[in-house]
Length: 331
Image (cartoon, rainbow, N blue to C red; front, side, top):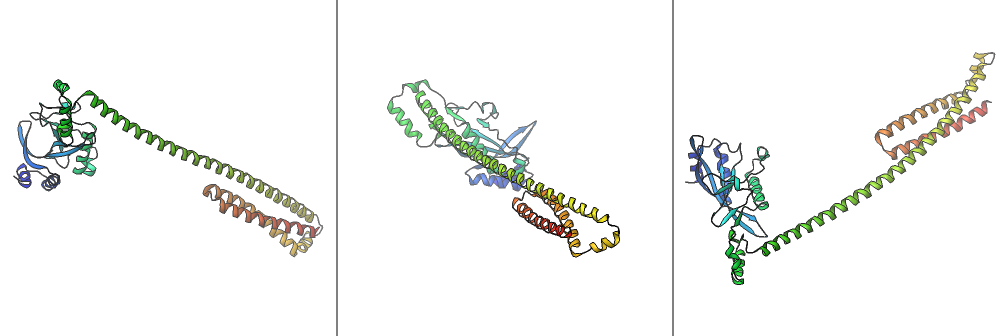
């Protein structure tokens, strides 16, 4: 039976999605068949895809016979994936998978992290995770035979020729020295990678440290600039306070005159009006200083803040000079 006939006979609810997943595996070289499984007291028929995947082991790609079973809940639940032991008399199974044996079969279930299955529902991604799991913990090993210790150099040479053909038979224990050499080679490779990663981390830490030092220097410079600006603002406030005192003195002397209305009216000269305007403008400049400082604390735009302070300071200085001249004229 072909894939469509099997799915029809199994009576899948999500018929099209099962066919699509099965076709993806057919494209990878898998073959469809019908599998009967017992659920409680009932026997149910499901689709099973059989084929091979290639797993990296000691710099070689080795074929692992694989079965993919689609439950009736697919794609709500992910497919179950098993690897097969082709010859139990010759191969032993990795102890990690030993307890996952399927009843009445030589296949072993591989537990895959499918927490994200409901998000992606991607069969190819699940197969990739299956291959990664087998690569991390290779599933099959040739059973050790004491007679292998008595093989001569020619037998070992013949074994190496077979190994280069890329078959599962190459996963053997020829002798302890060979295993030790392979393990030492793998450890050396891991050490090289670790050293490389450590150097990269050290370089990143150095860059972060340099960046932090630059930030500290910039912060110190900004602090000094803020102190200078505070000092300039204080000097400007003192000058404004002095001008106010002189203005108050001038006002008090004016109020002592016998004819207040007449003298006050006479005081409404061009110079007196200019004094009032200058005092009002100085008050406005003081308030603008406060608003500018509050704005800088929020925006941190130092260039615009410096430009505004310079403009206000210059304008304040000009007002003070004019005010002093006006006061000298009135005295």
